[in-house]
Every structure is written in structure tokens, then in C-alpha cells.
Image (tube, rainbow, N blue to C red; front, side, top):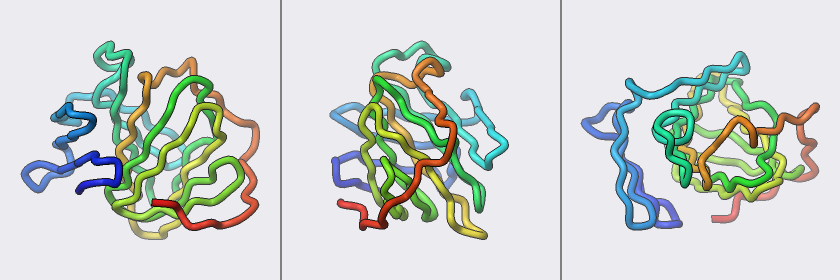
Length: 160
């Protein structure tokens, strides 16, 4: 699937555990079975393909995040990282600085440093799946959990 920012994501051999990512003239191929997993009680599962936690890559990390039906991330922000979400399956929403951005397969969302956000899977039977890029690489030191869920003030359409 090709996204608006020219990122191309392909799942190889019809399986969802091998992925090819082409972005900014670089190509990556990842096999998630040998990567680090982060599972949370909120229904979110993250597998880091490359980054500080897995292979010491400090410039950019890539991961896949999956949200069970009704699952969500913790409300949080990053003070010095830009995140990009590439929706590869399902549909959901991100509460971003108080606004709801509806997301579906094929959408791309860029989140600037210090933007308060939370991912929500609104589906009752589908998994929401997104490839996440962090620049520079994600680190737990720059994952700041908010005390409460970011409040939504409106429901604008996601700008593509």
C-alpha cells in the first residue's frame, strides 16, 4: 500500500508477520517473530522492528501496533519525537490535542512532538493495525503518560 507521503508498506508472502517498508529512499524488511514485544493491559500490542530497544538504532524506529477490538493506547505525548502512523488494517480514531481524527486502512497521520494523543479502536470485532515510525527512535524516557484521557472538542475529518 502506498501512502500520501510516498511510504510503501507491503506484507510479504501473504503473511502479516513479514513486512517491507520503503520510506525516504530506504528499504527495510522485518520479520516480527524475532523482535521485541510490548503488551499492555489496555488491548495494545507493539512489536518494535528496529529502534533503541531492539537493535540500538537511534535515528529512526519502526514498529507495528495492534489494538484489539475496544483496545486503546495510554494517553501520552513525546517531548522530542515525531511519530507517523500508517494504518494497515481496521479503523479507529486518534484523539490528537483534543480533536478526534477518524482513521481507516490507507490513512497516514503525522504527530508532532508535545502533541497529546491516544489511539482508540472503536470496532467491536476488528483489530486496528498501524505501522509506527518514530524520529528519532522511540525511547521510554520520552514516553510521557497523561493523567487523564485527552478530551475531544470536535470530530474533524482527517486531512490526507
